[in-house]
Length: 124
Image 1 (cartoon, rainbow, N blue to C red):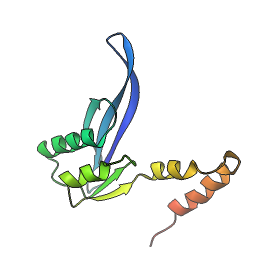
Image 2 (image 1 turned 60 degrees about the vertical axis):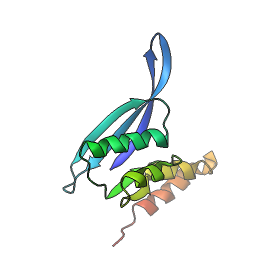
Image 3 (image 1 turned 90 degrees about the vertical axis):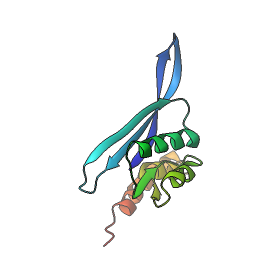
Image 4 (image 1 turned 180 degrees about the horizontal axis):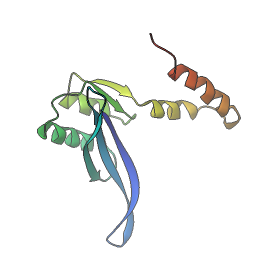
């Protein structure tokens, strides 16, 4: 399952405010993807995600084999509280963004090229 929040500016009561759209996308064993849920809330937080995960469980999500997340503090604890057997991994895009912020701009092209080789290596 991929769970992520996307932040948007929306107009609410005559003012522009920032809202988070919390999205859960499941991948079935046959490889098909399915949007499990979308929720609109304020700032992204592990506490809000805990509520989303509990709602998904009540709605029938029995287990998650692997969950791909960003680096939000407390996120892994929230997942483990609802689905303790889930393997949690950090999203590759978030890993790359986190790594690349330490690279000066003139070296970025070479860095990204080398990093792609790491993520595309055959593991067999």
